[in-house]
Image (tube, rainbow, N blue to C red; front, side, top):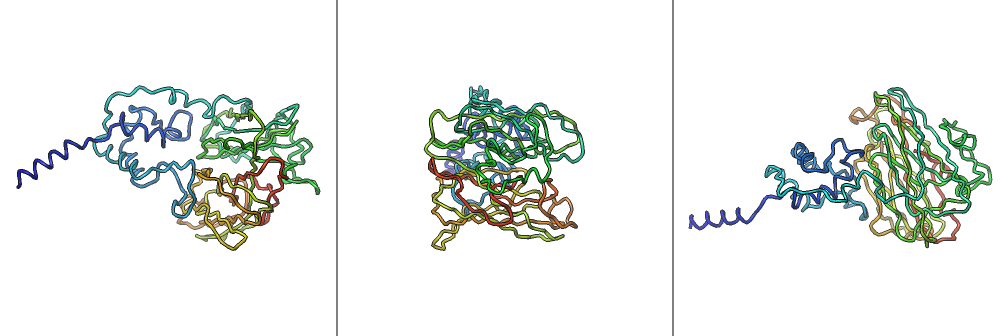
Length: 431
């Protein structure tokens, strides 16, 4: 009997082969990790080749075992499914752990194909229009105010934008960049000189004529923040770039001890034909909060009520360094409440835009409710100063509560589609 057991054990060991980089491991890393861990991206080390990966094998094991990498913060048990979910499956997790435990073998040498060779360029292909930041000198230290750059498009006719993509130059120094579409005649930062960097006053940023609707003032085209990954809005969907509109960059740089020059770019992809649906970004926000010193679980809420049937395409919670958790839910006209996304451990360094796997149809009268919690206690290791009362502000040591959401509706429908609750007017929030 003993001999039989030894034989069976040896047979089982022979049949099991450790995962190899060239076999099961490489596709997992390319699918989940290489998008951020490669030259020019946010990952602190490149992981595009075996030679680059091997020294980090134990660190990869620790991150995978903890669940900290790849970064994905939506709780799957309390959220809808997402198209861009980058979390590991149980099988992928086991493969990576087994691979490291076996000594991280390479297996048969692998030659990188064209997909990785193209990875340093535009993810979505060659843009139809590139809008550039014209060499902004970032100082080595100090507080840098929000900087605006107005770029006229001078388009002779309206165009539909099927997708847009950022190519960020100085990622370690870019807190965020927002690109807004500003229709001709808009009151939004109307005193900003075209083509020049400009620090707008609070009055200029909040300017609005009494009869000016948000659709005639500005529309968020695309935002960049740490954790950003480009995705198109889908077949038949697009955002509007009106005739003679401007692209307004709202840029927030942060100094990190070394001076640099930023030359980031925005790539725009025009629709080849008129879309069936228009995509619009809504920004419910609470700007009237005051977080008391030491409060470890301060709540702030805001929301949006739908004026017509809409389809929800994506969501992105936005807070700063004291951000603790974020939840967006839908309260339907019949009283039913559905959690759409629950982020129990918000991470300022990975601000993901969550694209729904199946866009959610929402009936008129639905309220999209955003609930944010902040940790202003000494236990928050990212807290700049737990002794301070914290209010809304641009800088990372201040705070924000914005629930960015992209919604879709049929072409030709009035874009005044929601009423925002809280203390800000529609679209008045900025990162």
